[in-house]
Length: 481
Image (cartoon, rainbow, N blue to C red; front, side, top):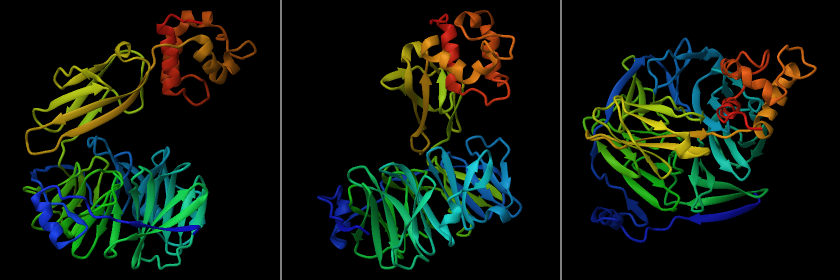
């Protein structure tokens, strides 16, 4: 390592309540996180599924590994048929999945795979990693998203398709990794080794290692989607946030179920389970923890998914909210009606885009995204949904782009040159010429229908949603040049 720094965890300046003060008297430099109330989880059965392994994907879907097949299930749309990825003998046991850029990497005990086009493909970097893979995390590095992979022999930093080996001179048989948020907001890697925990971060072209000073070394560490590191001891559960303060969450649960994709952390015990949600700890009322051997994971929605008694079950402290009509990444040219569906009764819904509140009306509830009111550019539809049944507020965010202006010279000509000119230009084989705006006007609706349906460009990849939106916006504006 190029440099060694020591990061000390300091005691909090003051406890928040008298309950915290009692804890501090017994454990100096640790803030006690006492449950503040109870939540009543909602439960549902998604589908019959008998699986040996259950893992969450960054996009909200789940991987279920059965004896005969590896499946992908979308819990947001349980009525859809699961997608079969392949045979377990080819994939191995799924351990963790992470997203880097537009790619989803799945770590199994046989290598690193890319999940693409509803199939597993062995990632090129997998062969460079060598020994049995133990853990993988994704963090935001100085040059963009990168993977850190632990094997039995070494730790690897994967940037692009290159794997940089980091020798820690330690036994990695029981290593665990977590992504931690630093006070600056940057992300760093925490590595639990026998007798110590290291923090690794990249500064310029230099890799720095810091030994994190803790009263004792945890049995393992886990990270959640908020950059908080959870320290699991034999008798206690602690966590460290970006403020670098330890928080004591009480006795260690029989099972800690956590995911780097979801915000909520489930602390499961046979008699008294808890959940850490919205930065607070709650008891779970009327909740019966699944058996210790039941495959379980936390999804991107924060819900606990478990395979029990031959069924895939969902337990959540928030109701499910789904949006139809405007998925993430939509490009809007005309006013669009968005329908809001929930699995709870009598929802109270607040909808907004930026500072603009949207009217929610109808049954099922719906809102209208009007390009003329919002203006061109990127926007986020924010939905906050509350229920009066002992659950937390449900939140849904959907990003979309509004395009209402486009011209031939600025946008459409470039689409024509890239996708249409070879066939529909002066020397092209097609009978229809499209090299001037005037040639588009008489047959514009036919052109638009052809690119929407993928019939054109002939023999080439279909146009993207943004290119189609630009063409449509150009026509709506009466073909400005």
